[in-house]
Image 1: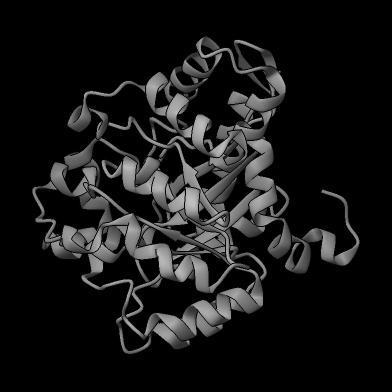
Image 2 (image 1 turned 60 degrees about the vertical axis):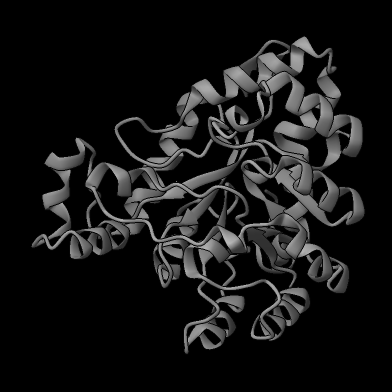
Length: 317
């Protein structure tokens, strides 16, 4: 268990990026470099070897170091389902697999159909601003119908979108924030009540809209991950953000996350310290803290995990 102001508390991380070899290879291609390894000196980061299972094992060791029980591993480039699946397979009782999908690609639906049969994938990630599509696009409907049928959660990035590694490499980020409003998710969340929708970073600058969406749709959850730099847009602090979210939604639809991503930094423990301190100062008791730091995430993925994971075979987690 992780150390917090309440003492030992189980911690599950809802937001860890799996920066795989394929992810770095795609950045190297865009940077016009010969290989992913050439990015190492430019970033001062470790570039993983080809086997994503070893990266999964690396993350398991890293989580052990901080007493973190489980984590969601997010594939950080479309088409990287195999990497995240291989990483999750190393510790299927500890990892949830998230994969990024561009539903506008010609093969988007077929890729999704293949993914839903993979027991190591639990959530599909949509980035409307990154991939330039509206949540009202009818091509999303068959994807969400399958997600509902197969009990996959759906992560939808809303609000400000900044990819730090692209800035560090001087690569452009031609994102379109016209597609970033959490309210665009409202009709879909109503239409698909069996899907657990996750909006990261409290809506990333569209906090009011994210709260409105979650208030109207009980199947919408907010993840708390990252530095939440967007608070500067509204003159907010972390305690105020948590207080407003808990006052409106209660503690049972917030998912703790860090937005950890690369090595050698590894797991971003300072995010836990900051968020735990803010919640403790608000007077949250240990039981409610446990909901935010672990129980809510387990509840979100329990339907899919029970269908495809170790419990489906009678094993204990």
